[in-house]
Image 1 (cartoon, helix red, strand yellow):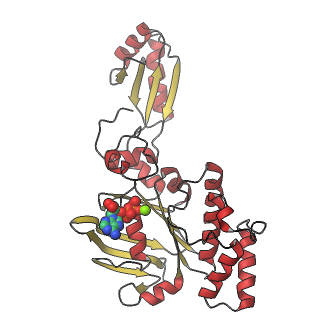
Image 2 (tube, helix red, strand yellow):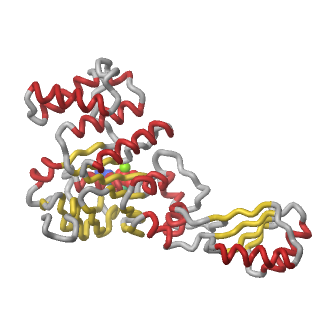
Image 3 (cartoon, rainbow, N blue to C red):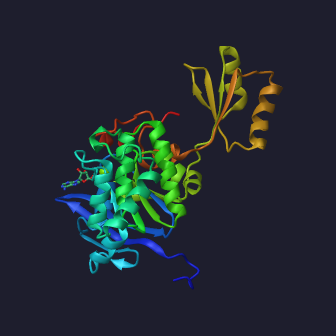
Length: 335
Ligand SMILES: Nc1ncnc2c1ncn2[C@@H]1O[C@H](COP(=O)(O)OP(=O)(O)O)[C@@H](O)[C@H]1O
Ligand SMILES: [Mg+2]
């Protein structure tokens, strides 16, 4: 494999399709995840992320598609795939009634490690995930972040080369989330491939080498965070006034602006370059108009996501159930 100049693919899918009854969840998607990278599948609740993870980790079968993980065909050789992957799902494998260490040793048994090997691997992983102190306590007493860390530590007992993380930080507080991000980055520095699903744009932006936006069963966009950001022109300059006369004068002087009469704000499309900013300021100066506040907005992943899905950025969905449907409905975007 090392002779090839193109990186080997840890995950390769073509025409992946899955329907439940007459509801098509994955409508023929293609994925290519190079070894040693983090790939993020981004989508709201109900988009089909867990379905994709379950299929690629051999828990359920696809209706169609040529699917390979680590070069092994999922349909023909699921055993080889299982031997090289680890999955940490939304539903934890942690048994709350036994201690963290006992959970780890159980995993070691499942992977047929010797007693000695099992204890060594368990101690090392508990240490690495900052769980040594809590190792003797029942897992039910752990915080959400600790449970996620234990879950991931358990996944790593089998030394998987490809790890599926299904919404690893959903429901975690910001500190635990950042902590988990650090852990995920570390995994990849060891050459492991991570397939990560998330509802959080920031998470994909922070972690992923490549991002796929899943929308209505299809991949609405695919690329690096920067590539995706270039897809939308969302950049603009915003000028705010307290004096209605200055506001009116500026609107007249600048011409092509979007007005917000209520907040006395003007929005001017801009790539954020020095040249464009200077042009705006020069025109205001020559008309002796002074804005109270000038802000520059450069496109971020939110813009991409909402441009692609037509969702309203202000419709923050709660972390559960059916809100995704309504959030995905096209609405007028006022930014
Ligand atoms: N076993 C199942 N039977 C019927 N419908 C299902 C099943 N599993 C998932 N779905 C439906 O498939 C869609 C995608 O679900 P899922 O993959 O869990 O989305 P996500 O993980 O992105 O929230 C949802 O509409 C869900 O209701
Ligand atoms: Mg899910």
